[in-house]
Length: 116
Image (tube, rainbow, N blue to C red; front, top):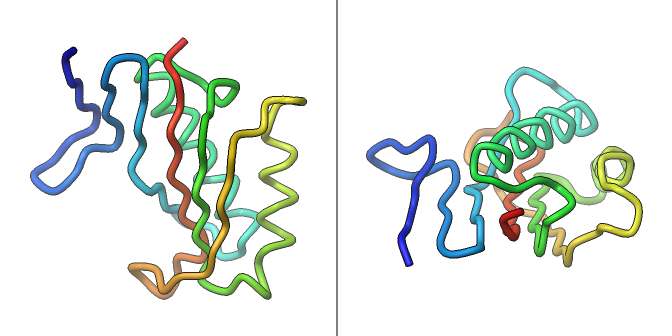
């Protein structure tokens, strides 16, 4: 089986496919300042990377969501996440609090999906 990398640089790849699996790096937001806006930005990035790698959100197997302040931002993130998912297509999911790479980043999400 071959490995294919997407949006790569010297440190990481945005996505990697191996066989029928798609692995995404942790995606972080652009300009939004609140958790809901950041979640929407991250999910849009995930949509784009999954499409490029031959998958989509309906083929998600697993998601890990990192929040810089789970007490403050969980409800806002979860509302956007729930609206984004297709009915009856929820992946396994872990949500945890973590110190993220930059103070302005409130949400980071990484996923594993099956290819279509």
